[in-house]
Length: 221
Ligand code: 5RP
Image 1: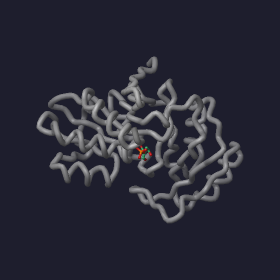
Image 2: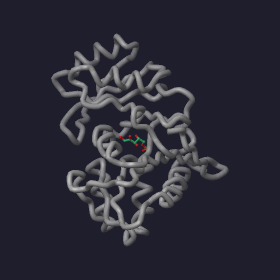
Image 3: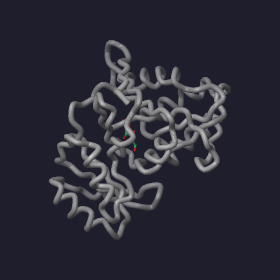
């Protein structure tokens, strides 16, 4: 199967986790887009969606799915999103598409995080994929120097502005053995809006698309 077919397979499987008559949290990226297309088939069963990016909102609306502001939603039973890397323990690198801040906010509200990914995303240790860090523009050089102090090689994602008007540093060369501690450390750097490490609030369920079907992992809470 191609990578896109694997993404489509997990997107389809994720529909099983959608709660009827409730809001659903929807992530960003190509796997999330496949999920949105599947969600369209059962849109009559949900109240609507809370989205983590402008692009996902547009795709949801194009299918006639109501998109509600997070501030107006007090209960979000499930959040479904892709990842750039995920461990069997549920820690993830996210933000390849640049939507990490809104993803982290919607994921924080979601009671259950279902990560959907093709098999190439499942890794023993995070960090081969450069870690995205959303930064206030005036802090870009300072944060880059701090990332070098942590052992990384930051690269400014040129020509890219996040939905929140900020810039992204993609930090290569970090072998992230302790994702929770690393997330805390990077969060404390002045000027960092969000680090694309999702470890404090990791995935509760991981659906991995493989050539032999969908593998379901449930990291211990
Ligand atoms: C966007 C993300 C995506 O979930 C991540 O980049 C995976 O993308 P894709 O499903 O296209 O492989 O975090 O900010």
